[in-house]
Length: 436
Image 1 (cartoon, rainbow, N blue to C red):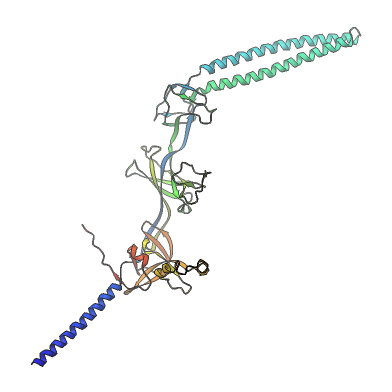
Image 2: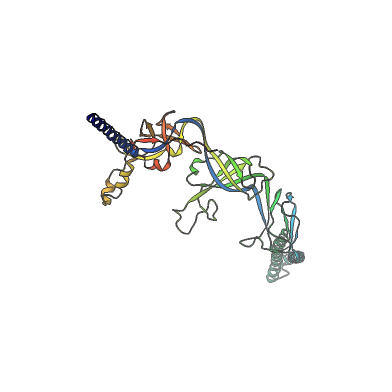
């Protein structure tokens, strides 16, 4: 009886030991497995969009400055007024210009009177010359008298020509002063709306003769509006004229305006600088600084509430495809592939960086090829599959070759994908239920 009981205890102990060994093996095996998230490769409609920020501007506007210096004595418009071409907008004091015009006019009149007198002297001198010539032909006067009459006539004719030139000079001066007088009246060169009026009556303005004339107001044609946005240099290669865009204006919540790319800047602008497109900096090296390109999007049917200067964001559609094989963007990773087509362990690559300490030897080593790819699930393992990608949507990327619809791939986590190895054992994390 005791012997039977002993056998039972021994068997039970053996079962416990075997079970513990198996359990321990399972635990160790599970510890070696990498927890991942997976998903099925599916077909989707993809839209590739480049977003950029900027501001709303009228397509055509004029900064109306002062053509002459002086004090503004009259402003006939206020900001927001609609004006017509040729309409008088402002008046600059003109007292000195009026005086100069009167002086110039009188000088021209005096010069013309001198010309009339000189022309009369020519007539007298010509009659005297002809009379002297007849007498000289009859040998009634000497050669000296004849030469003196001829010289006097030529002198009178020269005086007439000098007076004509003097009149032309005075007339040009008079017209210049009269032009300045006319410029004291500021008129609108186009039909539009006064969108900016930084000056008021009584302020002194500087004329166009200076390097920086005063801007009195801005008149803009608000019928055609555009958004000037700054596109990152990495996205500019995707843009071309005619691409459709959707404009969102911060001040008009919920309003989306359709547009079209009509201009693409040819030169980069240092981000955050006050430069305009087409200008390059002359000081310092900007090679490592982020740069943007100015892109103009012309708006279609802008709402009446749209105003120049409002902040805007343009979502430019660069590509659009329907029913294509797509995977989440984060599931596409980069791995080094050796000459035999096998994936190089990321840890091994990092360990090799600087392992020899001999830069000459390391430079001589053949660099492995970097390939885009995804990790495809095969039972409890994963294999790295190189892929060829296409357009990028908001959350997904098109796969042209490498995987097929319905295959299960690793989609996360991002941290896991960074270090995940080919042929690694995995366990799939259960999908989290949405909490209500």
